[in-house]
Image (cartoon, rainbow, N blue to C red):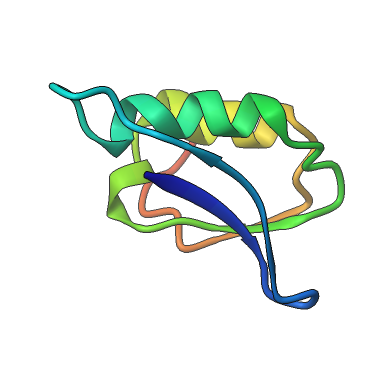
Length: 74
């Protein structure tokens, strides 16, 4: 299960279950597509450090991205 948590509001904004023979790496992009991330701060653990995930976050209009352990476009 992958969840999007709004820390300021203390609530879960969305959840996506992982496939039986998969992991959170495949569920993260699906969850990101469900959310309006413009002007948001996104933190993500090592599971979300795939280039495609980072590019999706930046394309969504995120102004600050912390916790990403890769450089987009490098």
